[in-house]
Length: 400
Image 1 (cartoon, rainbow, N blue to C red):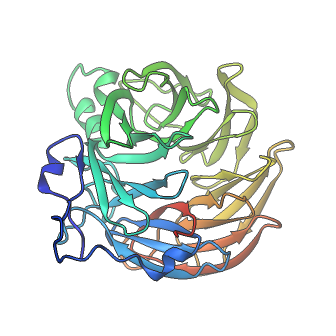
Image 2: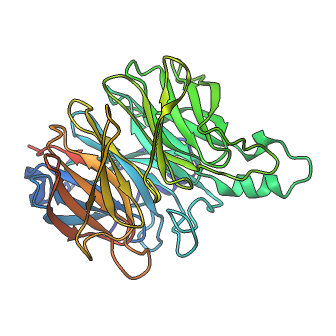
């Protein structure tokens, strides 16, 4: 059974968990046995749950816990992040559960009510707070110190409404980025950024946020040095083919991104053009010499320890491609038949020796899956099924 937050959480920008009376006979929550192991938490959109996968490379499914505010309604936990010390989990509650449709999330982005960011105790999985955001929250990342959370919004409803309104401006199709104080779970700002924003990443100094903007083939560059007053400083075209309002025809469809921890370049995964392209902050432009065409929908990737390789999943073929960041040579690692349907994200453990490939399933009948992968080689180490429609992962240390 879910542990619901107070219903007021749906009405305010932030709230805390429930406190039991002093000397009450109600026992505190019990930590699951698997908390003693390093593990990955995985969001399951259509199960309203988090699955926990052993981080020892075996791919063992340790168990699952229900999440959400309403125990009798699917609310769609979508993407997550963990605090640097591993004490807290932050996940988006999208308030929309896609069933059928096209694109990497089925009919993702068509929710009509605001979502929220929920903070969980990573030991007991009790909700500690919830911050209201906007419709269709997409990605969530944390600052290096874990004090701030950044939530993008993949809001196709705003796009549809703007396109159907005569004379509507491009800005009317925009969706926001929310910045939240993770200690108080107070929303500090909600800033319109671009149309269909989704993947996010921070510069090494934490002052610049990058956001993919799928509709108009853009990368948003956002100054977040003042989290209460972020400023969009540039909307950079990710490719040479023009794509302009009011007749958007996305040629590239930038959807996910990862910031290279060594040189701060931004590696962008494009759904429509099936490639990876690189933005160089030193020139404030895309690097035309770094375009890796992979021939499939590219998704959320990760770098190895020294950023000598970038690992990016291909959704349809369920393949993990290793890209040499110097030579740009690519090496595909297909997953075994039946172990991965619709690859979504590859997430590394902190030591960068292993990672997990999170696969959505078919969103209807086939559950999500997680494939454990050793980076050296690389090599497939194990796999397991999770819940329905899995899409994100975050590493957690053993909880004392």
